[in-house]
Length: 261
Length: 270
Image (cartoon, rainbow over all chains, first blue to last red; front, top):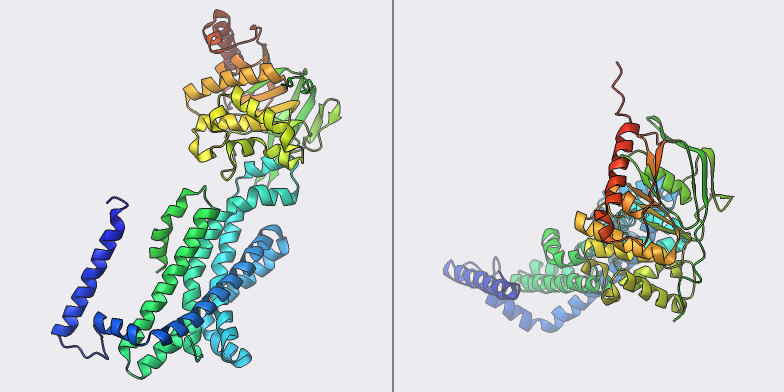
């Protein structure tokens, strides 16, 4: 298939699935609170647009803040793990242990400590998104070829010069790989945290719509949430193409997204 | 235009006196180099020729100041080599170009690291790229170049700061034969123009004879000096030199010496 034809094919396939869904639900007379037809979901989106937008905005802020924190903390920690023996031998192990604790299980505790609201949700989002960024940074920095470091030494490059000119740019493709994984995890983190305790956000909206048998609204929230996730992921892909312009592998972004989802 | 050969001081003198190196690992120790002695005059082009894994690269890395010899004495211009000298250019088997820099910025990398004036060296970079025929690719990125072109950029980068010593560790080994021969000719031109002392590690007899003033033949590991061949072919040399009867005679001679002096691997003792 030629590249330009791909979007057309995707749209047609999606339209076919939605059409089949609509027809099936109507023919089988499935109650709307069980499975609403796409037309009802669309209607719910129109009717509840202001509410959806408000909750979407809240969730978006949680996702972006949690993600940014995980990047701002994760990349330097990855650097320290590569450069410091203590960090590598002690804190790396601790990080792996931390990673093995299900963050969702911690969410009720955070709720007790930090209360309802942004802080708790951002903390859960941060913890879920943070680990892949650390790992990707460590892997990226270690992937430098030993001869590259020999070259740096023959030029008498300082540690700092070696880092900025040789290691860090070389690690960028891997770091962006980690950021892409983190961007999808951040969405999961925010929603799960909202499930545990919140009065705002799309996660909250999904729960409350379910409780009131407003299934079309629940579906509409999921659609909006998916759009946020998609837009967020492709923002990272777009950034990657600019920053890591020399790396053709960034064209593989779509396939790595499919793997994540 | 200022002549670039002027401010390029003559190459360094190298003395190796019974140099040896043993690597210790958990599984035991391996002697890579044993009792190697040689002398290289300023501006001389010397090849180290020997079978793969014989310790040629170890000698080069000791000269680069990347590893220290544990026996004997190794000096560059009468000073022991404790760290890389300032006037060192090195080319590796991989071109090691930085993909995120243009060709020109790759060539200027040593200037940036050594905090020298970019302005002053840009002209030299352009001239070097012209000598190896890459003037049209100054603003290209490495991924747009072929393997041979990339290694040419690597050579220009090694020469940008007018080094007195150029160490080349099988720089053409990853290239196909035709490209390899073309780069040899380019290297002859570059050496004739800038006259640094060159130590060139290879396992190609043809290449060693074409390029060098002298070929040092090394035995299998631990590398010992098996013999030396003086290459008395007139310079400038070029691609046509390969067809010269003297060249063919020297290559045949070198092959004979190599076969005679390099003992077959010792039989496995029970």
